[in-house]
Structures are given as C-alpha cells and as structure tokens.
Image (cartoon, rainbow, N blue to C red; front, side):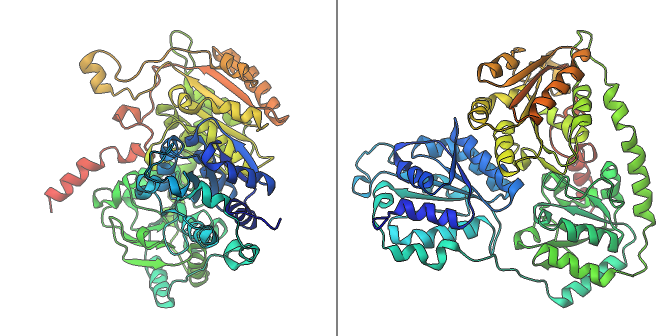
Length: 571
C-alpha cells in the first residue's frame, strides 16, 4: 500500500466521487487502470465495442444521475468511441472518457497505437487533455469531472488520456487525501431578484403561456410541477425530458403540441435549446409570442430566439422563486384548460387506435399493434428506450414512461441495447424495455452478449421489417421503389438464443400477447430477453411521410422552413 500508483489514484478519485461501475473494453494501454479499478471494488462492465461503452455511460448518467465513466484503450479504442462521445456532446450528457497512450519515452517513435487522441476528440468534448505527470491526476480529474457535470458551463463529455508510464508511476500517499480527490458539490447560481420580478410580470400578463422543458429541467421535476400549477401554463415535454411531468398533470397538453406552439403568447423554455426540433424558435411557427428563457447555462439563453426576459441560474431555484411570486395570483387558465380538454380527447382513443392497427396483406404486424401490447405491460416506473428510424416515430407516440431515452438530436441510431444495459445498471429493480428497428439493432446488437454475461435484466424488442433507411414517398413514386437499404427478415430470436437470452419470434397478431406475457414474466425473474417481431415494411409513420423520420413533433413542424421563408419574404 506504500507503493500506490497513478492508476490507483485514478481509481481512488472515482471511488470517492461515488462511481460504482465503469464501462470498458480492455487493452494494453489501460490495463493498469483496469486492475486498479478492480482492486478498488469498482465494477467493470466489459463490452464488445467502445462506442457501446460510451453509450452505456451516457444512459447510466441519464437514469442514475451524476456522471458516467467509459474506459477505452488507445488508437482504435478511442476512434471506435468517438460516435458515442459525439452523441453525448450533442445531448449534453456528463460522461468521463478515460484512455491511455504509449509511455512518454516512446512518443513519436512509431509505437503501437501512438496517436494524438486529444486532437481527435477536442471538438466534441468540454475538456480533452493528456495527463503527463502523475501528481497532476487529482487536479486534472477534478477539472474534467466538474466540466462534464456543467459546473460553470454546458455539461457534456470530457476526455483524459494517461501515458502508460504515468499510470505506473508511484505517487506520494498525501495525494490520496487532497481535496480534489473527493471534490466539492456544484456551485449554484441564482437569478437576480429584479429579473425574477420581470419574469413574473411577463407570466401574469400572458393568457396563453406554454412551458417547453429540456435538459436543464431534469433535476427540477418537483419545482416544475409546482410552477405549472402556480402559473397556469400549458406544458410540452421534449425527448430530453419525456416523463418528468406525468400525463395526469392538468398542465400536460402534449397531444396539442402544434396548436399550442402556434397559439401561445408566451413561450417559457427550461434548459432547452431552440434547435431544429423546435424550428429554431422561428416566428414562422411561434408567431409574435414573447419568450422567457430559463437555464443554468448561458448558451441556452441566447440561441436563435432571444428571450424578452432571460433568467440565468439554477432552474429549480428560478422556478420556485417564480412560483412564490405567482401563488395566489388570479391567472387566466382558460386557454390551458381548453387545450387540456382537447389533449385528453385526443389521447383517449390512442389505446384503441393501437389495438386496431391492421396487419398487411401478408399478415405482417403493424408496429402500432406491437407497441400497443407492450404499452399494456409497462410498469409505471419503467425505463423506456426507443431507437430506430420510422419505428422510433411510432414508439415515441405509443409509449409513455417516467424515464424515456432515445437517440437525441444527433440522430445517433443504434444505441438501444447499450442504453438499456446502462440504464438497468443505474436503476436496479426497475423494468427496462428497449424498442428498436432491425437496422438500428444491427449497430450494437452484439451487446446482448454483454447483457447476458453481466446478468442484466433488460428486454430488447426488435421491429423486424426487413428495411432500414427512410422511405421517402415522393422518391418512391419517382423511381418506383423504396429508397434505402433492404434487409432480410433475419431470425434475431435465434441469434439471441445463441447468446443465452430467452427469446421469442412473433409472426402474426395472434402470437403477440402470449409471447409478450412470457417475455415480461421472464424479465421480472431477472432474465435478459429479446422479442423478434416481424412487422410490416408498408406501415409508415406521419414523420416518414415527410421524409424526415424520427424528428420529434414533426407533424407540427414539417413545413416550418417554407413558413419561415414566407415570413421573411413578407417582412
């Protein structure tokens, strides 16, 4: 114990930060860290591909809070991980990626896997550094973890690599006790009282206010529910926050999304970028609505559409302060009430619509029929992951849960299985169900092996429709055939059984309920299960008809670009 190394210092820092597990694929340049993690009692979930390791760390952070950790080896380990890092970057998820490099004396001499990882990942990370001296490890780790968590800026992935000889260097025992090892809680900023007063006045004068939540609201669910009650505003979630406010809340008007955005006279964003999913806040969609922007990150206050009032500070603190100012005020709730009534009417028939979705002439199941049966069997606290192209479009409407994950704004399909593993590790005891298209499943399907080896109880549902890419209808008419990759109706259930999963292949409507009953029972018993459902390639979601599949809320926004051009032309 007197000869503790840089690798031991890394493990001790992660342990002190509450890290229980690391997602990793072994390699020579990281073996010292690997062994130190194991000696420290940190679980290593060893994966089949480094991209999946980062996906798992991403989902673990999203479901469990804190930051996720991925450990990848040098060279191809880092290049394989880059798509996962990019996805965490765009989704603004706190992930720490650790790697190694050849020993310092071998730099630039043609050593195995000698390359500049930092130069590769710098544009998609908050911090990217090589730690060249073992005594600097606590300070560098503290800086990277704080940046990943968004202390003072936008959260997102951070990257550190450590030369092999630095990992093995013996370090003074005193370094294990300095303050950077355990770290400090995140500093919390609060909006100015005068700005809060101005925001409250803006809300009081609105008659059609709507709240749109994003990343920054995930830690403020209680404060958000209280604010919705106090303000009388309607509520629209997004893929970043689906489930944090239950559909039973009287402010929830998600089924009226398009009308709500068009009619609102005040739009309140909570830690949410006005990106393509929200038409960049364009007046072509939102008209003359005023904007109140609330976030703990300045960049989420100044993108695309500036707020009439902007509150920079902890989102929960801002919402509570506004609720204090609004409680007891005579708010006009007529518009929100009418929207809520229409929302309830529109959603009331959803279950019937799912149950009645017809199979095609060959008996292949409509995706909605499959999703409707899954919906019936979901626990209230289930974690749902949706992945794929058109199948994601069906899933985000059909399935609801208290925790929901999908590819996010990068459109990074192929993450269902690793997301499910990361989520299940973060939330033991909760039902975890991942639904995915067959093309998306192919990207990381081998990770079912990881799930079995580590005894992770998850359900993977594959919509097997023999196609992958989006079918753009006008191009189909033009060329007389589908546009995109055509896949075979492969037997994914047989593949899964080969890896030790319990698996069912569903062909025809009559087989859906019995197979799902058995699969959900096996899941509850702690098994890893897979459903391979043969679905119709002829079923098209409303999104795919525009040629822009899986983009959330596209029914309301498909023509936003044309509308904006008209708005600009008319001055």
